[in-house]
Length: 102
Image (cartoon, rainbow, N blue to C red; front, side, top):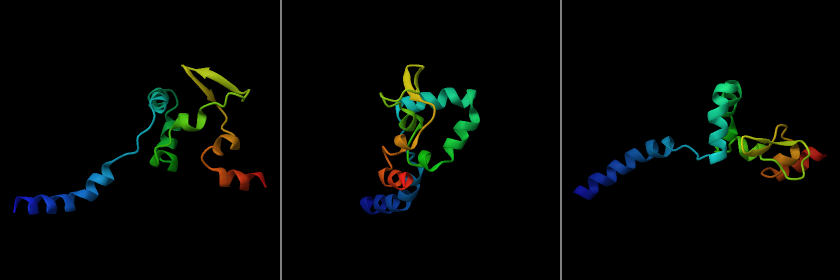
C-alpha cells in the first residue's frame, strides 16, 4: 500500500518537478548576469525572455572570444567579443550559418 501511494504521488507531482527545473548556465554566464543586472538591466531582461535563456545558453556561450578575432578584449577576467558575428553563431548553428552565407 505504501509503495502504491508513493507511485501515485510521483505520477501527479512529476509534471511540476520537471517544469520547475531551469537550465544550468556556466559560471562565466552567472558572473555576466550578476554584474549586468545592475549596469545594463535591459540587456539581461532581453536575454531572460529569449530562446537562448530557456535552453541554458548564457552570455559567455555566445560572447566568448575566438583567439583569432581582433575585436576582442579582456573584460573582468574573460576574453569577450562585443559584437557576435555569424561566425560565432556557427559554433552552435552550422546549418543556419550556411544559409546566411548564401
